[in-house]
Image 1 (cartoon, helix red, strand yellow):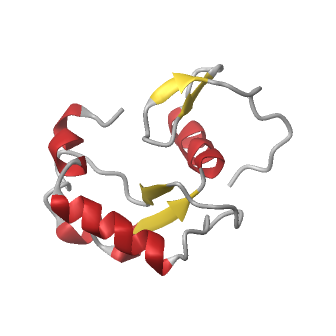
Image 2 (image 1 turned 90 degrees about the horizontal axis):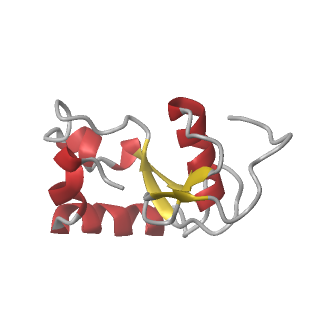
Length: 107
């Protein structure tokens, strides 16, 4: 789920255009594992302080194409998602459909 301060941003035409371009530039392939990408991820996460900075919010240097599993791993490593929860293709926190990762290399 998008945080409240970013809700409007993620529905904006500018974000949709930047997201589409990022996916095209990476040929729809996850930059971490090579599987089909489903999510465009901000390397520097958006905050209320930087969401207005186009280099961070929309700049291609700050965006990466990821599959859902790799996106979940990045967020799990950084944010410690409770066991049994994961991020879905829309970035929503949901109950896991598959077993938690075990013995998976961390980034």
